[in-house]
Image (cartoon, rainbow, N blue to C red; front, side):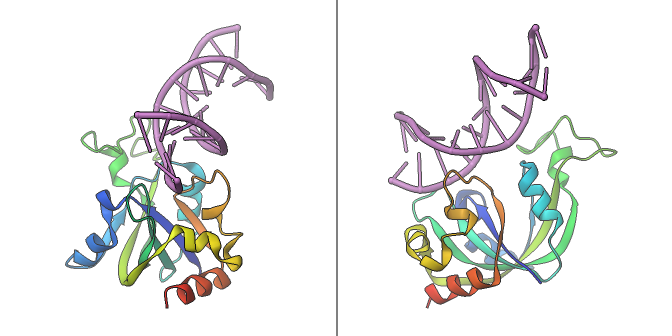
Length: 152
DNA sequence: GCCAACGTTGGC
DNA sequence: GCCAACGTTGGC
């Protein structure tokens, strides 16, 4: 059982969108960075996930979710209509992967980035490391606990 | 909209 | 394999 943080632009897929799915499940598609993809490959069913809102007005962790299906080829890479289409991908040789994520909870208050930055227990979180642009990153068990404590 | 930081591409 | 140019990310 591992912990992860997934970035999402709420204009694309917010925690509210996750909660609004009839099945609460979404395909986590569109990861187009090899390091992030390799983290997707390490995920197990049941792993817990922080859902982080980026590139928006209220930046921070908005809630949690869970991995409901482990890695498989991202269908968007094959779809010419998709913004995530990759002409260098083929069914034989897919480059990109997806997982399925199921909504767990929306925090009563979003945990803002500056509070995460101000928390001494979270200085090693990849999210707050200088220049970090990973959209999928591991979170330690201690960091997970610290984040949940901050939301109380 | 700015721009620092980083990843990718492609010529050599 | 180097590295300049370019594109993207994402906070501010």
